[in-house]
Structures are given as structure tokens and as C-alpha cells.
Image 1 (tube, rainbow, N blue to C red):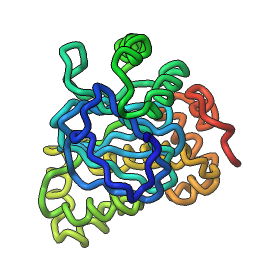
Image 2: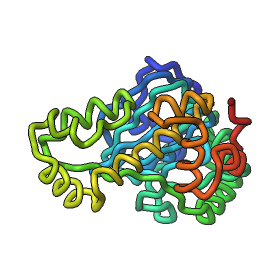
Image 3: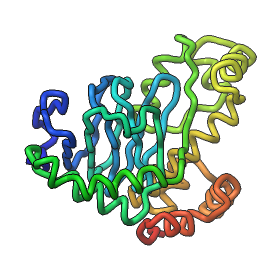
Length: 262
């Protein structure tokens, strides 16, 4: 069995195969902070998810996959319907032991899809040829990661938790000072210390990541612009091009995305 229902109990560390693959269609989902005794490759054939690590959030649209080494604490968040794929590997010397977020080309995408549906008791000798090709593609994949560093100050913890779960746009600085009871200078120092960014720059980076997430979920451009409080569609397109070098449509097309709704 490889395709599992959202409420199906599953623990890859209790299985014995060298490679364990699963596939599922998930809606709103919060895995909670956890870790595995196996390496994990995390990917979405459709939809978008984010991974929260110790001090940052990594965005995973369908053009990227994350390699999580065994023992790394992480939390997976999904706010829309996601065609979830996950591969778990028994630790071996030839497998990477560091975190990687990689670009997924068409061949790697097909390999992940095939391996996600392997029977859990598939003999290793029958896995060998595809595993060799998978390892070659994994080694050659381009490192590509949209990340958002997170402030660690406890005064911001409740606000950050709400924002990560709801996907709402971070409030402007004057509203944040009211929320946490700290001055704008104090909040500015916190963000520079913990993220290396001003609050405004951090808010803009969050805005960009949320835009990528919404676009990956096929949200119409006008709705993306509205949700992220741009004055117009053209203002959003200009912002997106300034930060990525491409319009939203060209960006998605270059990464195998579907046609962008208007």
C-alpha cells in the first residue's frame, strides 16, 4: 500500500524496506513538530506546502522538493489541497546528510511519483536501477530555496503562530507594536538580531513567499493581489518581477506550472 488516507496512522520508522513511499491528497494540515529515523524527501505534485525548521520557514511549491536528513525536527504546514508525496530512506553512506531544497525537473518528478507508489515490501533488487537514476538526479539537482528566517523572541511567539497557521499578511509595524506591547525600535532590533532584516524587509519577503504559495495553488492573480493588499494587479506584478526577475505567469511557466488564472 502506498496511497493513504489523511487519517490513516503511518510511521515509516516501523517499516523495514530500504525505501518507503507514500502518496496522499491532503487539505488543511499541520503535522506538528516531529522527526524521523529515516531520511525523507518531501514533494507535492500539486498544491503548495511549507516546512518549518528551527529558525526558518521553507516554501515548497510543486517545482521544489526538500531533502530532510534523519533526525531533523520539522513541521509541515498545508493550507490548501496538496497532492502529497513523501519518500523515506533507510540511512546509507551514499545518501545526503544535510538539508537540501532542490529544483525538481520532469525526470525527477516522474521518479518520485513512481517510487511513492512502490509496494512497501518491494524487493531491493527490483529497486536498484530506479534508485541509481534517482540518486544521479538528486545529486545534480539545482539548490533552490525560498526561505523566511523567523524571530525567536518570545514576545512574538503567539503572533507568529497565528500568522503561520492562517497565512494572513503580517500587520504593519505600528499595529505590531500595539499587539506585542513593545516599541517600534525594540521590534526593529529584534528582527535585525534574529533575521538580519528590518521588519519591513521581512514583511515584504513574507509577502513574496505567500504570493508564490497562492499562485502554486492556482489562485487567480487578482485574488492574490487583493489578499496581499496591493493597490492593483499591476502593482502586484511589478512587485513580483522586482523580486524574482519575472512576471508571475513567466515564473510559473518556467517551472512547469499551469496557466495562471486572471
